[in-house]
Amino acid sequence: MKKIVVILSAGLILAACGQTEEKHDHAKQETASVEPVKVALSVPEKAEAGHEVKLTAKVTQNGKAINDADEVMFEIIKDGDKDKSTKKMVKEAKDGVYELPYTFDKDGSYQVISHVTAKSQHTMPDKTILIGEAKHNEHAHHEGAIHVMPIKAVKGEPTDFMIHVKDEAGKAKEKLMTRLEVMMPDGKTKWVDLKETKAGQYEGQETFDEAGKYTVTAHAENKEGFHVHTEATFTLK
Image (tube, rainbow, N blue to C red):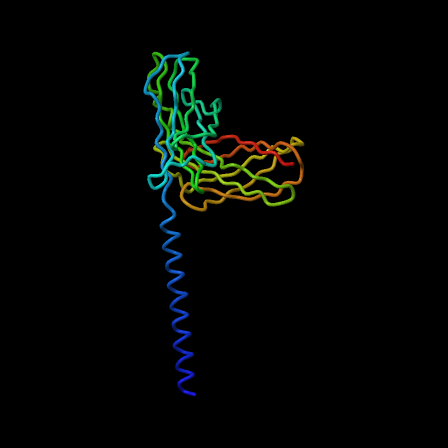
């Protein structure tokens, strides 16, 4: 009888050890898999108005090219005027390089931001290009940048919202007051408060029942005068 108890005890200990090792190995695999997504943004320093240039973003993870990013969008801002920015999506890539041929119509200092969402990560490096006789705009980066992650909405179910905010140096901006101004199809406005879930990342939820197009204006600010905003849209069917 004692032998049986000893054998059973040993078996339970071995099983527990095996489960612990499996969990440990699984945790190691998960840790190893979370490699940062890197984006190498390439923008000419200068160009002439009316001449086409190539804006490229090379997206990699652990040295391997990513050709299936969830979203690659180039945002182009003239002389720091974020309210009149131009946004262009690029859906195809070769060897991880997403290329946007673009023609600047007027002289000026332009900020080019590549918003990249891939492998559940988001990054948004930026560079400046001078067109014609323009000089660097010292205030172009003063307010920082904000990006709304792609919105997937289903009628009658909670819709998840996530935004990322960075300061003028491109670093995650923390401890901000953030909320969404949602213009609904009937013209009414609904406000959605967001909470910071990690540095520079803010999330929230809201449920919508009316079919149609929604316009979302994301606001991020603090008491020191920092304020950025941007727009996004989604359609509820």
